[in-house]
Image (cartoon, rainbow, N blue to C red; front, side, top):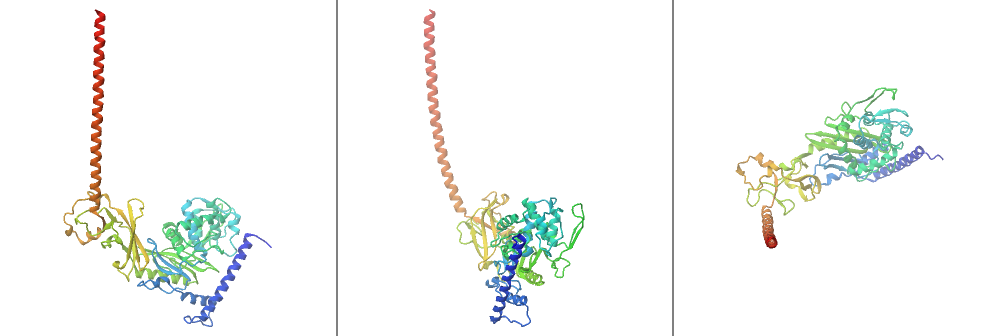
Length: 501
């Protein structure tokens, strides 16, 4: 029996397909036994599976007073706000799934971080021939070359598998693309992935190549922050002109239907990457931005074209039911988690300038079914970068919705520290909202300052006494030496005079 990687890959895919068929049979059995799902005799196994998946629990819908999310056919789905990481919609977000070509958002992200666009990528034998016949590609041949920029375009626009292999080999400086998996797994962990393992750079089927909707959203936070990658992913057409190393021009269309010009074009789309294999089914990771709020959506194990419909439904749900709230302009509570370190609204003098302030760039995501006063907060005093001294984390019925950094106030806001405000009541409402701050306990400051002052006074007193003692001692010794010298000089003079006589 042959024992080549390609043969082993075929065996793995066969095993995987067998397991999926068994899972489909089990799903059909569950459908027959479930009183809540209607099964028609003319339904295909895919339709039966979709019916079962539509009936699965949406975990975010179980949060009290949380906006009810839509029914989607995907087995796993997530909607996450990009800046805060707040999860707006959650359905089996930590379930292991096969990601298919959505894997390529990690591959291209790593390539953009490690390579310049003008680097030349050469195609090896394995990069070309390890791509199964009929699989997505742009028909590159051994020895041909592309720039890294052309490679990124080929991967994101045409989902080219052999180009992904070649990029992996280029980054690792080997002719073994599998080495790149270590870099992928390390970067995934750095990005906050919890349950992923990658074995190849393009998502071709492998039992050990898996991820989750949550992990893809975490990777997406970095990918969709890269404007270049987002722009490439929305490009309608791949055009690589003929050259000395590429005899025939490569002209391919982008098959994703959610981008501009597609059948499901979404006007607020920032970027996207789709995927499909027979075991992963249809997958889509995408990002949209509206009114300053940026949302990331991942749907896995769906059926075309439902991955587009589910994604648009989730985006509309997010933009319609949640608001991005600036904490520094909204926080009015006098105490935060009963902390004795900070208190708000004014100190015992009613006039101190703030020493700490809430970061004006930090936001939380608030459901429109809730008000700010309903949310909970907790303070962490772990120091961060720069002037950060604490972090206030917010949650709603146990669901994290964002945080705000507590920083030392800017120099112009705190100098001098104990100046009085001339007419605090005369400030406008807008000025009041811009000065939402957390104050340090002034009594404690004065007490500590008095203690330090007393210690400093005693130190100076002791130092003065010591110096005077040392001066007197030095003066006594100096006088003795001078007197002794005069005495010896006198004796020497008398002896000289007697000798002269």
